[in-house]
Image 1 (cartoon, rainbow, N blue to C red):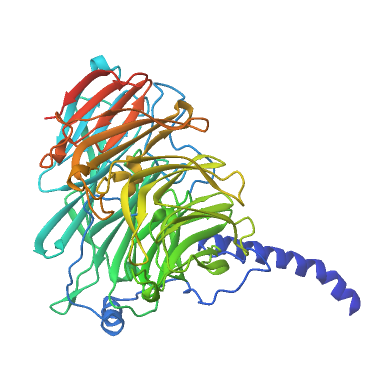
Image 2: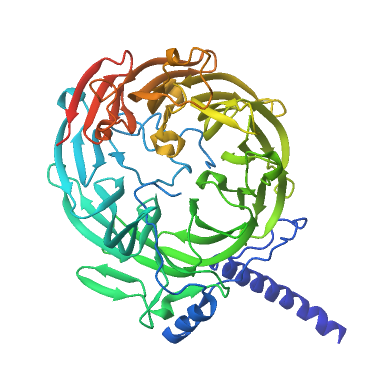
Amino acid sequence: MEKKIKKRAPLYGIAAVLLAIVLAAACYNFGVYPPESETAQPSPITPSALLNTFSSYEELKNFLLENSGTQEFFPYYGSWGGMLESRSKTMDTYAESQNSGFEHSTTNIQVAGVDEADIVKTDENGEHIYMVSGNNIFILKAYPPREAEVLSSITFEDTHLIGIFADGDRLAVLGCQYVNSYWDYYGGFYEDTKTFVNVYDTSNKTSPALLTSFTISGSYFNSRMIGEYIYFVVSQQASIKNDTVILPKVYSNEEIREISASEIQYFNTSDSYFMFTTIVAINVQDLAEEPTNKTILLGGTSCMYVSVNNIYITFPKSESTLIYRTRIENETIGPMVSGIVPGYVLNQFSMDEHDGYFRIATTTGHVARILEQTTSKNHVYVLNMNLSIVGKLENLAPGEKTYSARFMGDRCYLVTFVKVDPLFVIDLSEPTKPTVLGELKIPGYSDYLHPYDENHIIGVGKETAEAEEGDFAWYQGVKISLFDVSNVNNPKQIANYTIGDRGTDSPVLRDHKAFLFDKSKNLLVIPVQVAEINETKYPQGVPFYVSGTPVWQGALVFNITLSDGLVLRGNITHLENGINIGDNSHWVNRALYIENILYTLSDKKIKMNNLEDLALLNEIELP
């Protein structure tokens, strides 16, 4: 008997190995991963299991009736073009060199290899510019500047354009069509919304040809492009009207297909209301490949972070944030897993994936002008791919809230604020033990953080002045800072520049794609609206709460170096007198470069200036 056992042992070993391989493959395909570390801390909140699938329309309807606090229509505020929503390998999102064509900048993105839709794109050679202006897409020959001209345009009726992607001789246009619109105190909302992607052949720039159009019911939420594939997300309320569930619909080639209940997945939980959230994958190069889509019944969507392999969607629920992850690979959209962390998320830069872990920064509580009424605290959580919490750093900066975050490799940089700006340097090299390495407290705060290099960070936000009464500060002009974090225990601000007085604003504070930086060129460009205070009206001194009057709008061009800091080189405006409150169509909202030419863009004009001396070379007034 003993001999038989010895003979079978190798067979059992082989079987065990095969079983492990099968289970590992299944875990990979279903998006479930084993614990990253034997010492990983268990999550205090257990994440949901894999999704279920409705077996029938009746099951879906009964689920909504039993688990949703709201079945009737409620106002859903769709995207008006703001992209709702870390770099793992590169420190510069702008191209320093191209394999072919002209050297040119590209869209300021968060993750290397994951493009983001924007209102402006260049082609791969840097010779042409595609841009959104109102309901039009313009295709322009941009370089050389003396030959610049509008080559063609595409006009959309009754449509709100969201953004574009460019890939080779393909141009993808994303937009929304709103039907049955209503208006109330908060603005517009829509009962019937469709989101579309049109793909054009732009090999002939003077005559772009529509190749295909894909439309789905629901409001645009967010999108990314990886390789040849565009992934975009739409949301539609899961409402019941006249005793009927309004299911999502796909419109393609003049055909309408309703997404059946048996195609919809869900987590077996209750919520105040539910949304049909659909993820769509489209190959813009191989149009013979049918678009794929996956619909999940979720509580809603608020922010999105995308790595090369995963889409993370978040939604606030009570004092927590739900996180949903799905794996993507070409046309394949994998099953979804979910997790939950305390607090709410600021934006996409509060999230990151690195070395098999997902990191997220949140804030709990609220900030009040009276210190005793303030309950806010800030936290950083590390989760594994099952979205279980394995590490946490909690209760940072009590009484303040997060204004910006940036994950860079094994570090997290976090800015909180109430009266001064603590910049925290957080070590994440041990995922189970996030640790504060150092912090810097200075007046002002940063709304956006951008890597200068591995040891230096650029911050764009507001200067502030402490209020005489109350535990808060008054924001002042737009502030650009350069931080040195080479000594992680003692971060320093080595340069700063304040623009204008209280009331000065920049789209960079809300949209990172308006930010142009290139380290190799020592170049930093941001669009701003400058406000100034007439100090003669305040002989006793200007109160901190007084706002200035807008006096100028355009792009400010800086030299930025570690030795000289921030030096203003000049400015470019598209307005004759620098400002016209009623004419925001000439407000500069983007900047890019091709070779040694700086291009500034507004809805109605493109200017081309020499990067060396900012001399005007040409300009195009858009029709």
